[in-house]
Amino acid sequence: MTPRPRTASRRAAEEPSPPAYQLKVTLLDVQPPVWRRILVPGNISLDRLHSAVQEAMGWTNSHLHEFSVRGRRYGQPDPEEPDAALEHEWKVTLREVAPTEGLSFEYLYDFGDGWTHEILVESITAQEKGLRSPVCLAGERRCPPEDCGGPGGYADFLEAMRDPRHPQHDDMLE
Image 1: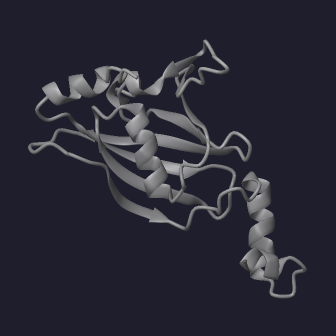
Image 2: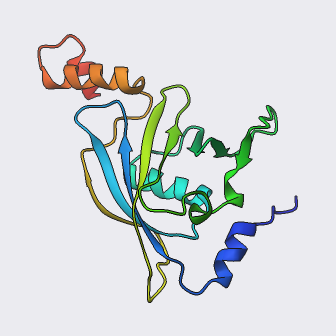
């Protein structure tokens, strides 16, 4: 098996100090809000950004995902079920798809549960020393448990956890 070319990574290696992007990642449709503020190099490919979001949010990378940026979709195309509209996420960098501060886009994780995140480019700053890997700067609240049924299931989960007399409280603790 021949490894696929990593065009975006090759371009990144040639650049001495890409700008740093401060991103606010907010999980939509849940209350109270769950969010993280991360700092990533602007030349990070979207497949590596996916890994950074997974790590920062506390997801387990157990499901499919995709980014929607200005009308374009990026992810890992399935060779079994090709989707012509889905572009390869490893071929494009954050700086290419989100070149300006204030721009926001969506990251969808787990198509069944439908965890939609808003990623907001809060700031873009020059770096004297290159940022080598993503850093989580701040955040609030834990990520929902995997496979709990999306935002609606998570609301039910929280309700059962808050009330020790709830009929599903003990099951949810497990």
